[in-house]
Image (cartoon, rainbow over the protein chains, first blue to last red):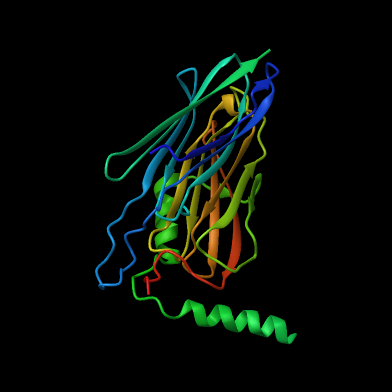
Length: 106
Length: 148
C-alpha cells in the first residue's frame, strides 16, 4: 500500500536549500466521530513522519488527529551529498510505509 | 457592517454551536503550551504563522509556519509546535529541526473543529521560545462531525 507522492528535485548544488514535499494517502480518522450506527469510529492516524538523508534524520514530525486526511508535509533541507532521501510514516494499527527518492548533488 | 459580513459572522456563529464531544479549551491549550515551554517566557516575534483568515472547509486548512533564523550550528530552530484552542485535543503537530534544514519553514494541512485561535511556538537552540498566533473563522467544521 504505497500511495505516496514525493516532490523533490532530482539534482541540486552543494549547500543549496531545497524544498521537499511529501503526501501520503491515509484517512486520518480522528476517533471523535460516530458512524452511521452511532458507534465511535476507532482512531486510525499516522503518528510519526521521519525523513532521512543517506540514513541520517533530517526532519521528524509528530502528527495528531488534527492533521488533515491524506497528510501533506513540505519542509526544507540543505543538499550536502548525493544519495537517497528516505521517508517513513508510522501510525495506528502497525501502519508503516517507506519510500525513497534519489538525488544527485554536485 | 455589509450584509455579506453579517452573513459570514452569522454562519460562523451557527456552526460553532452543535458539538457533542468535549472540545479543548483555551485553558487546555495554555496547559499544553506550558508542557512544552515550562516556565520560560515566550516572545511574540520571529515566527510567522500563515493561515487563511476565513476557511470554508475545516477538514483541510493549509498552514505554513516559518521562523526567522540563520539555521547554523550555533543558532537554529530546534522545534516547532502548533496548538489550537477548540479541537478535541490541543496539539496539532510537533516538528524537530536542525541546522541541516537550512530554512525553518514547514507547511501542512490541518483540521479545525471550530472558529478559533491557532498558536505556533518555536524553540531555538539557545532555549528561547518565540510564538505567533492566528485567528481563523471556520464555516464547515471538521474532526467531530458525524457521518450522515
